[in-house]
Image (cartoon, rainbow, N blue to C red; front, side, top):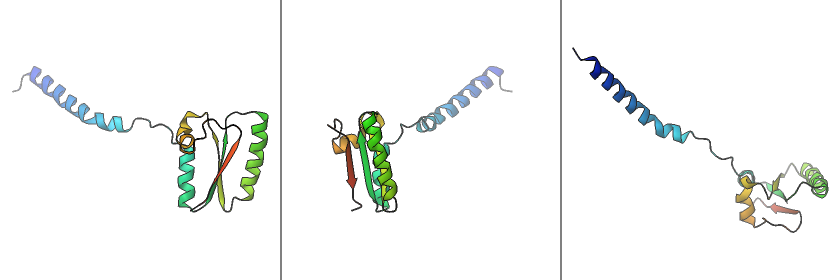
Length: 117
């Protein structure tokens, strides 16, 4: 018969081995940062061979809201052939698209149009 202390030691060893084998899976399931929506929109438009209108802005002031409404209205008018997205250059999660086009400090509101080619 196996002594109780050996059963306890074996139980702890097996439990430790199981827990250590689970650590990589837990690390793989760690929350990922949100994707850069601008770069995702570019990829989706390219795959669908659609135009993409990107509205870059830096603050939510009355001028931006007014031109944002014009941008949204125009986007609805061309929705059959184009996608639209508005990007705040101050949003850290959008740093990928901001640095890609060098629009981190636009002197004014900016709209960029990407063709499907």
